[in-house]
Amino acid sequence: MKIPFRTLLAGVAFAFCAPAFAQGGAYPAKPVRFVVAFAPGGPADIVARLVAQKLGDAWGQPVVVENRGGAGGNVAAQAVSKTGPDGYTVLVTTSAIAVNQSLSKNPGYDVEKDLIPVAVVASSPNVIVASLALGANTLQEVVEKAKSGKLNYGTAGAGTTPHLSAEYLFKILAKVPVTHVPYKGGGPALAAAMSGEVELVSVAMPPVVPMIKSGKIRGIAVTSDRRVAALPDVPTVAESGFPGFADYTWVGLFLPAGAPPDVVTRLNGEIERLLQQPDMRERLAAIGFEPVGGTPRQFSEYLKTELVKWARVVRETGATAE
Image 1 (cartoon, rainbow, N blue to C red):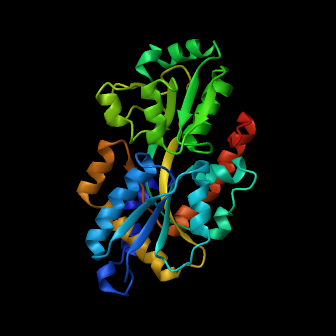
Image 2 (cartoon, rainbow, N blue to C red):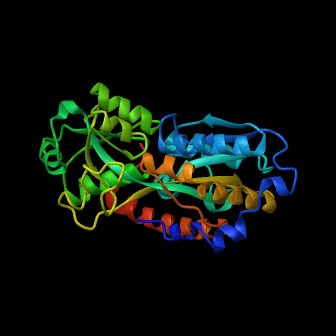
């Protein structure tokens, strides 16, 4: 599903919520910590490091990236939700945060009460990839091999949108038994596929694009509604026999509840400014990300729709937080 406020990157939204840090306030007066909810090498980590570098240069203050993977992003989200709300600890996570509220019996936090949505930085289709050893070139070939009941697929963790996308695709649409193996990030999941630990991986596009292009792993299908420029030779799931199927992973920033409103506005405005920079947009596009942006209120409203959507998918698939 596409993010409905993607078109609001420019114009009024930018003018409204993009005050420059240099023009007011002391924030940030010390280093800022980005707590990434997944291991290095995955989409949240890639976005966090791009943004951290840009913000550090603009602020003259370090932005330190700390990876705290575990429980499909819940470990980091819970930790950030309990930190002091001074604006110096920022959660960088994915759409998994919307899934985990229904997938986990006790995620350890309430995303609507304990965290403040600041900005969606970018979104990406998910992609199904296969190890070269599997010998499958298309999604239909994967489905045929999956009928044996012996295939495994890795993800960045239980509760991530690539996990739920794959569960829905394989179990509801294709009706084949494929075993889910959760990892602590997209990077470890892809490493497992290349080593033969799993045959398939469902992951957001950015970490896998260079691997597909170099021939280390085979792209099977992307979950976008049309092919993407970063992987023009990889067909969509819809093209591969499952019309109407489309899903995306987004990466967003959150602050603990109680963070000063002016800090929320300033951080959001700086993200908007970054997303207008041609080099930032080019770097995101090269790895399969599309810039998003928008105001905190728009992010909050979108989050509500995501919570409803993924609760339904969890019910239909019977997915659990392994």
